[in-house]
Length: 137
View 1: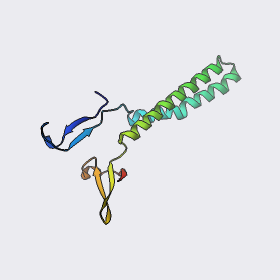
View 2: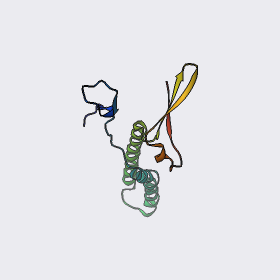
View 3: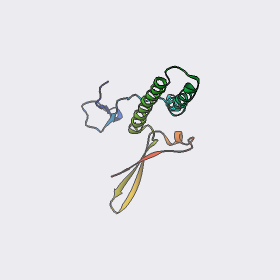
View 4: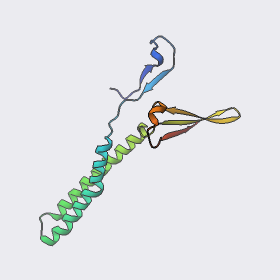
């Protein structure tokens, strides 16, 4: 798949027709919520705890290569944090965090809001919250 947008003719129109065209973004790699949550827990709690434990106990009990083990854990933790940060930015840019958008439009003498939902309203009824991105003209 290329990095460019691929046009999709709206309403089943043929290629020769002059009709509005919807654009689909190419699929990008994002971590699943479950994978992200597990890796975040590892980066925030497990690796720092292991480094602290090995660093503290290692000197007391004379464990081997304390400095190298702690530095390695720190490097792995930093790398994992960077990957998680990139994943977060990709997720935010993808729009996947939103259930649609609230478009603020000027209608001559008044301002209106148009809702553009990513799903049928009935599908959103079971959610505890609906998150909309606000777009102003």
